[in-house]
Image (cartoon, rainbow, N blue to C red; front, side):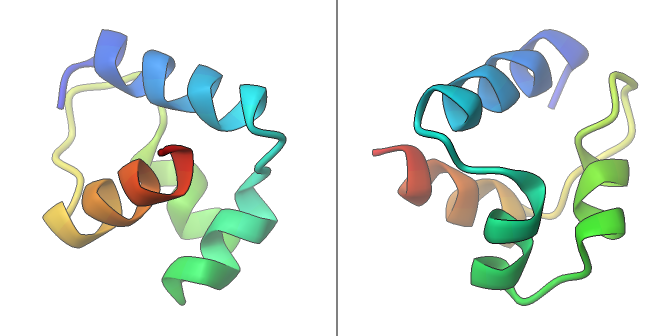
Length: 58
């Protein structure tokens, strides 16, 4: 997932009023870990995290 995709995902979450704490609770991961996954860098994000976040913004 490239940085632009991560920014777009964060923007969609913000539009739906879903913060990191709520998303992390839903995905059963620490909020700090979720924030690290969504930093603007090129580090990989686990597929289950991406899939879970995409379900939340649908």
